[in-house]
Amino acid sequence: MKDLSTKDESIANGQFQLTPVTAALLIGLSMSSATEAAIKPFRVDQTNPTSGAGGKRIAIDGAGNSVLVWATQAYYVGGNPQAALVFRRYDRAGIALGAPAVASLNVDEGYEPAPSTACNKAGKVVIVWFSGTSVLARRLGIGGAPDGPEITVNETVADETSYAPRVAIDGSGKFVVVWSTAGGILRGRLFGADGNALSGEITLNDQDLDENISADVAMDENGNFAATWLSGGRVLVRRFSSTGSPLGSGVRADLTREDDYDFDPDNVTVESILAEPVIAMDETGDFAIAWDREEKTTKRSIKRIPKKCYRSYGYTYCNDAYDLQVYKLTTKSTIRFRRFAATGLPVSALETEAATVTSTGNFDENDTDVQFASFSLLGAPSIAMDRDGDFTVAWVNEKTSRKKKCYTSYGYKYCENIDTYSSAIQAQKFKPDGKSAGKLNISASTKLLPFNLSPSVTMGSEGDLGVSWFKGSPDTASYTSEFWAKTYPVKMKK
View 1 (cartoon, rainbow, N blue to C red):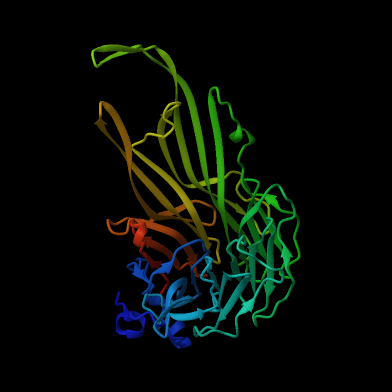
View 2: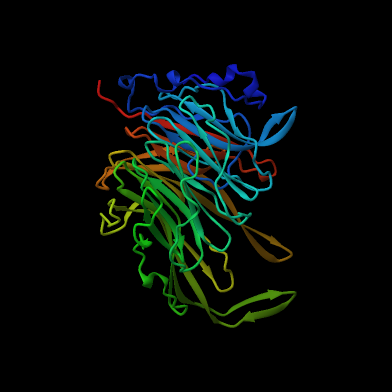
């Protein structure tokens, strides 16, 4: 793939211009020229982007063209770095459609803007983010230029405890934004294709099991939508009509057993932790929800430590025999999903595991630091669906390798753990019936950039697939972050 950005001096200097992209370039690529082969991964940004919490940073239209959005502290105005929200468009072949462009300079440097974007099959785009006390939105036209001014989404005052906003769009360009507020109340608001509000703030959660966090939303072609979130450690979902009226109460999506939370400190402790639910929907309203689950099982046993004697300075000292409580920790980390019909009824009676890893370690009552050779965790799921119900789930696979280093000083033995970290972006494709359609290894670790973070997956209406993520360095003193993407054009009939 040829990177056109190298020809633009303003990009190299970090000075992005609002450069409109013509609609002809956006939708003009021949569908018959597409292949199933993945486009070589390409770096999207030319600055050090902000890689914190965020929603979908990539979206694909019906022609396979993509838009990517990110935040940066290094947009230069008059030679001075400034916080900005930036986007860039690419065609189906992964070729940049012009330079990166600024969506907004209204970004509070004190907080993570956590941008998220959505695109319908016609190419209309909405970007949402958080700044100061406001949830903001910006629409982009089919040609890539901003379509109207920034929109203040929230009516009530938000604050720094508000969670990252999410957005979904229908076929006409109508969109819905969801976010959380202080006190764990989840809000949403509908807007027309012209950017005018169609509703006041909608309260998404109708029950307060506990703190309500991590809201996500998906919308069908006609504007009906569903929101999912985490409440009291459970994954909930609630459907809404195209006018924002609730279609029933919030229902539980996960099937975690109550006995997964049993604690027996004298023998076995089992704990399950659910996090980060995400949702995707097809044109007719069928949807799937994915989340990550970490199940920890701790088994206790007794190890008899025999009497031990040693000499020091001509004297003999002995430690009495005693019983030592030792523990084996088994952690099963999974990415799970469950499918639902447009009516809200579950299509699958059971949860499905998209991916799973199991790690073990040991510790005792004298040394609670877990000892292991390697430890893996899955997290940060993202899900996307095309118009027919094919869907893809992406996630991060984080790996920690541990070596124990011991040394002797003044007659005493000291040991410390040396940990090495890395992470990779992986994905799994599924058919509408939930059966696997193939695995994808999106990005692996490198020596200089071993961290791959915050995956975001998207699917166009025809099945084109795109994934974005951040690459990071291990040096926290001068942390380097890069924004990358990879697309998989769908094979089309000639």
